[in-house]
Image 1: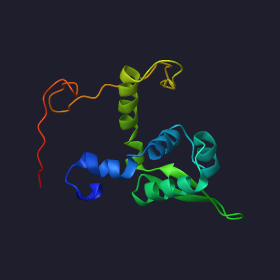
Image 2: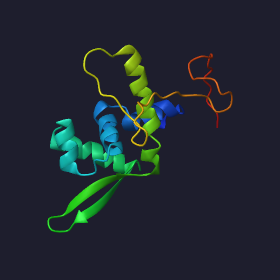
Image 3: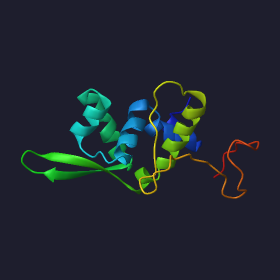
Image 4: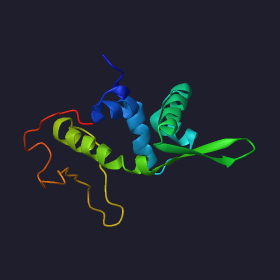
Length: 143
């Protein structure tokens, strides 16, 4: 099997970067405003070496940008790039799926900060206007 990052399927290529839970949760926290290593570590309870690796990969792939905010001692923050900001709908689509198929007990809910309404995402096909998942699909490699 080819490396996922080399396959023509864009889902496989994308999952090669953000397909593990830690990377997804880092992206969730970055969208919630976290930027600093210690804040990510505290929020996620992740081992420092694992967090360093995930942050480095997200920076290398252009989803996060590493910026120095202190020289003494040297400290960096991790800021969403355009590609990182464009990832938010993906996170909400996963959350919507989880709400339907994995809910029960205590769950985290997401609200629009301006009007206070709970976010209930809908993914639609731009060309047809049909909700994704309501029509058959066909998969084809195109150059």
